Every structure is written in C-alpha cells, then in structure tokens.
Length: 310
Ligand code: ADP
Image 1: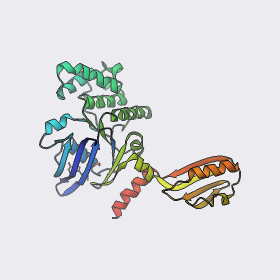
Image 2: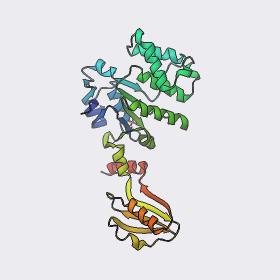
Image 3: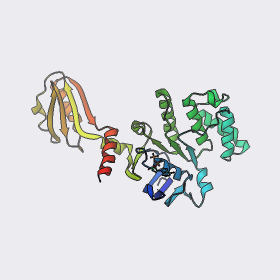
C-alpha cells in the first residue's frame, strides 16, 4: 500500500461564526500532484495554511508523513516545503546568499548546505544566476528561487500556492515541467485558478466551493467526465448513414453541415474505431473524427452552480 504523505481528516475552520472550511477530508500519496481548485473565497488558502501549520484548524486532524501536525509540529513541518503565492524572497541578496539563509532556517548543517543548494539550483535551473541579486532576476527566475527554497531540505511534500501566476507562457511551461519532475519523487499540492494547469501538471484534482470539497478524483477520471457522448465526423464525399445502423451504441446522427455530422453515442461505449473503419472501408475520405469534450470550465461551472442551487 502507498504510504500517505498527507492525511487531512474532517478539517474545519471558522472565522468567528463564518465557516471557511467545512469538514474537508483528503489525502496525498508520494508521486501524486494534487491540483487544488476553487473560486475566490472557497477556502483554498485557509486549507493550505492549515496544512502548513500556519493556522490552527477549529476541528479535525492533519497528519504529515505520519506525524500529527498539532502534537508533533517540528517533525511534521520538516517534511514540508511551502511556496506562498508571493514568494518570500529577500531581493537584496544573491540567489546563493538567499538559499544559504533558507538552508540554515530549514536546519541544514553547514556540512551539507552546499550540496543541498547545488542540488536545488540544478533542479530549478538556477546555476547561471547563482551570483546575481534576486531583484535583478525576471519573475520566472524569482519563482524558481521560491521553489528552490521550498525543496532545499528535500521535503517529502511540496505545497505551492498559485505557482505560475504572473509568468509568461514560456516561463509557465518551464515551471510546469519542473512541477511534473518534482512530482515523481515527492507529493505536491498546488493551488491554481487556471483550470488547464490542473490537466497539464496534476495527477489528481480536488475542487473546493464554499468551504466544501465537491470533487476529488484522478485526472484520468476527470478526462472520462469530459466525455460528452458525441463525435464530430467530416468526410470528403457524402456518407450513406444506413451503414452505421448496425452499431448499437450510436443513438442518433445529427447533420451539422454538408458532409459533417455529430454522432451521439452511449457515453460508456465509444464507437469511434468502428466509425473510422466503416468510413475508410467505404472510401468516403475521412477528414475529421474527433470526440467532443466538455471543457474543464464547463465541468467547474456545472459543479459549483449545482452546489449554489442546492
Ligand atoms: P480562497 O483562498 O479559496 O480564495 P480563503 O481561504 O482565503 O479562500 O477564504 C475563505 C473564506 O474565509 C472567505 O469567505 C474569506 O473571506 C474568509 N476569510 C479568510 N481569511 C479570513 C480572516 N483572517 N478573517 C475572516 N475571514 C476570513
């Protein structure tokens, strides 16, 4: 069985009588990159702060790598690396100076600190800028420094709050690749408003709305959920639709335009291969055959609006 790095059980947090996080439970295993999604005010930051030990839950239990965060905070926090949404950088220091300072805060011995810094710089692509002042680095590089300080002590768990906000597309791509790579040997939780980021970087997703978890599943299941039971088909010459009558799981064929159709099928039984085979065998000139997917935005809106109307 995979050892769990985070176990959050029945977490709640009240601000006076306002319930910001309401009976939330989830876990994180090694090798998982968990995307934490939710609209503004949903309770993401409150949850992340509780996981990092910066905010006490009103009720519930958090175990970090088996250590109870309230009873054994030191051992638990040693397993955590945290990048807040605004990286906590001393910009008047060079990258080397800043990472040395962070290494000492993390309790890394003088003997091991150089090796730890070299490793973090290597993983975050910071070797070339090691002696530059952080203030003079681009936002993408500053974010890398923020990630480097979070992984310096080689924590089992990395918590990243909005790690790609404000970066340009190339920087976003680089940081996502880094997250994926780190995810192989660590457990990662990242919060984001960018829905496609979850598909790009994460193995699992959970959505929080009004303090409650409303979805918790793997990206594979999410992709399944995106299935609409429709396939768009376009051909060069006109098809004889009777040819498809023996495919039981096709419900209807809707004409969109000349030689372009929407096949409605059983959602659990995709006939795409059979459709392709028939078109190719009949020589109708297959131009397009694409499953129509529900977007992540549509799933998000339907889940959060269901909750609102409940
Ligand atoms: P998110 O990170 O998803 O935007 P937050 O966890 O910041 O959500 O906030 C969840 C809810 O708790 C919101 O309604 C917010 O207004 C409220 N809240 C957050 N921090 C405080 C605080 N320190 N005092 C009172 N209410 C707060």
